[in-house]
Picture 1 (cartoon, rainbow, N blue to C red):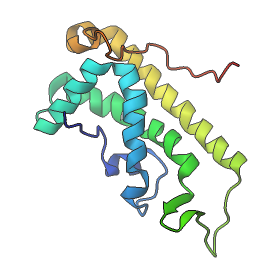
Picture 2 (cartoon, rainbow, N blue to C red):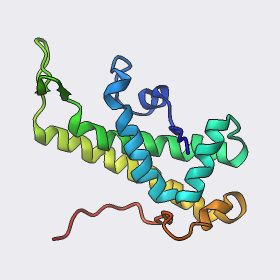
Picture 3 (cartoon, rainbow, N blue to C red):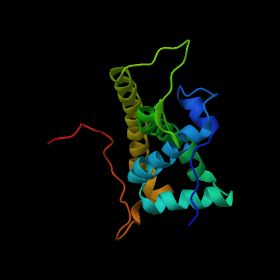
Picture 4 (tube, rainbow, N blue to C red):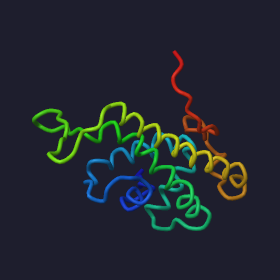
Length: 167
């Protein structure tokens, strides 16, 4: 099954601090990762597949279009940043792995990158909470796929709070 991205490059630039000059190839895979891991986790496989199919067919409309525009896009953009930021300064090429630097800029420390990731995670969790709340009020009447997951499908997670790892 073909799978569509639920956001565009324009959405990423609009909702995050990613510069319009950043090469799409540098971050697009992190959008896909965030969509598969986070969005599918919160909307479930059946609704995820329905939205993907509608986007590919060019007929995303009604409540589904509103859901994508109002809830999924801002949520996905910030989860994508959580996934992208740890790797933003690095490139893997035939010559190995290297870190970018600039003559007129200063590289940030790991602590500063971790701070940015946590800020993005907080924002992503806020939008995720809003999306989950939206589902609690409207899923039964607007999105029947939300409740039809079975077997090895991902069932929607109804808690957006990440409280860290407990070992």
